Image 1: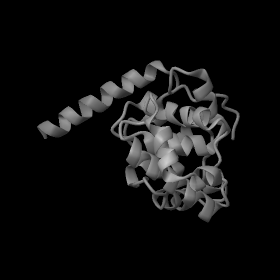
Image 2: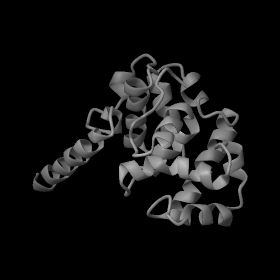
Image 3: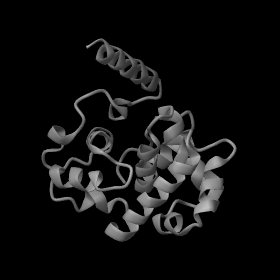
Length: 187
């Protein structure tokens, strides 16, 4: 995907390498990054691949029986705090990648005309809203060198996983997010 050999967001070097090498794994990890510890969310794609016994493939995940996919998500250990709903969202995401991008997640950003187009494409994905999409634009620009025109203006302008260069930064980011929530409650 790029010259980066790993995104150091989990305690597993294999999972970190997968995130940097596999666009679908990165999309799924970002999808799972809600109401769940970041490092576990981004470990999810690796765990799913291990349970499938093969590399992640959008067409494959899109076509798996829903109950079978939910069972894979339940584990143990569970891939997500909400294994049933996140299995369904993951499958919907993979179906969108198949239907809109021929099964190649990289095409979401590789064929985007600019950052506005990229953001629009991300926001159209199941499970991706405005905030998650803006964070993903930041991940692409800051961590992977994917920098379509205007990416800095479209990327999240708050602390996010895009700012995590080494695993210890995950803890710093968690503390920043906690402090932001506290400040928001007081306001």
